Length: 294
Image 1 (spheres, one colour):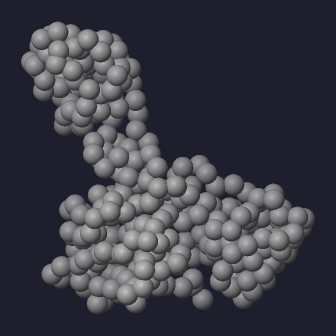
Image 2: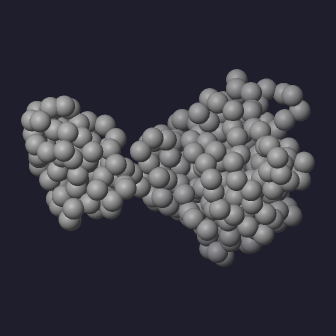
């Protein structure tokens, strides 16, 4: 199993391998007159065959800004396959370990059963690149390919509610200890006090008014008084309401596609899911709306 990451606001689909939530940038001292050119970049952290994005480098002929495959020389030097005839200085080299921008990079390239793509919550941009979403690799029910929202606070954006709550089993409405100040519609909550698993017992906020918290679905987690909540940002958006959902399975991938995931999914009719529920792939390859656990 390999863990991948996507961030619709800050990710890139070119020059990134999706293996980290952020890329690391280092300052370049100089490029050498050579073929390949040596880049002096203290503590660059690259290994051979890594892609690196060079930006802001000046004075070299030819210009070397752009994406290159690096060959590691030592901790402070790597080469790029460019014949530099006039050396340059300055700029930065960014590694390729950062997140992707869309989920297409995950589904449309070869993956292994059990691989997971975690998508940052609360982004302004959507995770759709505007093209048909294809699926390249098979999986199986025991080791599915999974695309999910961030439940593990990888981006350190979760907060604890300012108020405590009385949580009632099977109810959409719950009462806060004081006027609610932390929550807003579209965010997600789960019971922190009792250690509820957010993948099973996280709920979307439908609205707040005074001391009343209203959820979109009845609460099925741990209940009682004086419960603190973890507040997560809104679920990722795959596309916008004006866009037609285009997802295609071919061959036997119709029977072994994508695992369920929490995602905001929009579509204009055609009997396909819309609004902001969960989606999952069923045995016939269709996307169906899922419900919270009972």
